[in-house]
Length: 69
Image (spheres, rainbow, N blue to C red):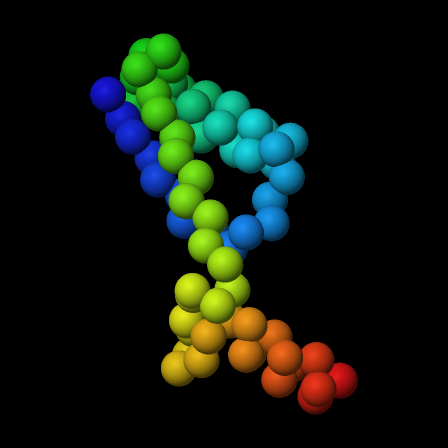
């Protein structure tokens, strides 16, 4: 029973998530021979104030990038 957890910033649409679920499931079936009925994909969406990158929270990085334009 494969379980794939995708951690990402909030924002993907329902349609985008559905496409990812289809593609990842198809890949596990094709490459590993897994049963699609037993394949699970979990999205964990995180806000920009709860995700850090390069020593800054993502919301702060975005503010600085916007000011630099």
